[in-house]
Length: 332
Ligand code: NAP
Image: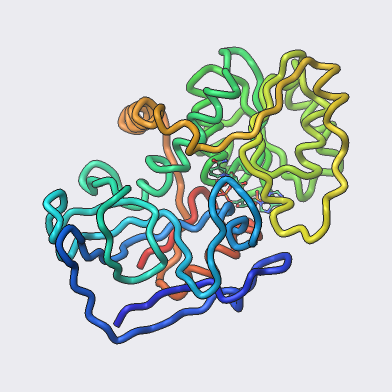
């Protein structure tokens, strides 16, 4: 039996489970020459997948209706007719939401479960860690002693950004959606201060209080009013890394945001969009740093692991309710 999850509808607004369809097929898959058969172990669910559910031009193609959804997957090779892979190898790559699938091996990286937990290759040692490291360094250009604000701070990318910033000697302020998450930022990840955006009466003022010297870098994972509030606190030559905007991904109308230009002009500030795949040449350097810090115990991570293939859509939807701490991963 092979299960597949396909895109059933293009969502309007917030996605629901009805936008996905699970198909079960009683078929045997046999690899041809050059192919391998994979059995899925872990599936990554990520906010950016929401954009791929729309039929819109983007940096990555839209999912097709009635075709499998794809995301980062860790899978085991269970049959191989490809000389580069042997049975028992574990690989990571962009694969379909299927319990088993055939691959040519293209784009797959072998990963070693004895060096780090397999799920971490979808998180801190995967695109999440790369996004945090490269977004911060390539656009943020951090300097010890500076102040950074990170939104979505208790999530997969944000929690790594804040820790790297601490390693580099910055004053780190995180913004997250529950008191428990804010507490975790300080006690587990070493942030200097945290703000709960859901209970804060005035985020702008709370940022000013937590950043008495102003904000030099803003790592933006969420967009919307939280990011507007940070703009009121930026310093001269501040750098704003626009990594994501989850607060508006489900909008059906254009958001009422403030005009950023006066803030940028007044502060000679830089605001730049970031897409991790544009920095592929720097992945080896980033992985070397991330795995080194992990081994030294300077970097840690947390994961929310949901069990069961059928729960992939719900795990994805739960990202929009902040049900995850750190990386949201589904274990098959
Ligand atoms: P994540 O932060 O682990 O999960 C999403 C988090 O967003 C939730 O836990 C929730 O936390 C927060 N959130 C949900 N709705 C919100 C809202 N309306 N306002 C504020 N916060 C909200 O996800 P991730 O994988 O690390 O991704 C974080 C961001 O980076 C996303 O925007 C994603 O698209 C982006 N990203 C970009 C790249 C790139 O190359 N540009 C690569 C990876 C990720 P709370 O409980 O705190 O609300």
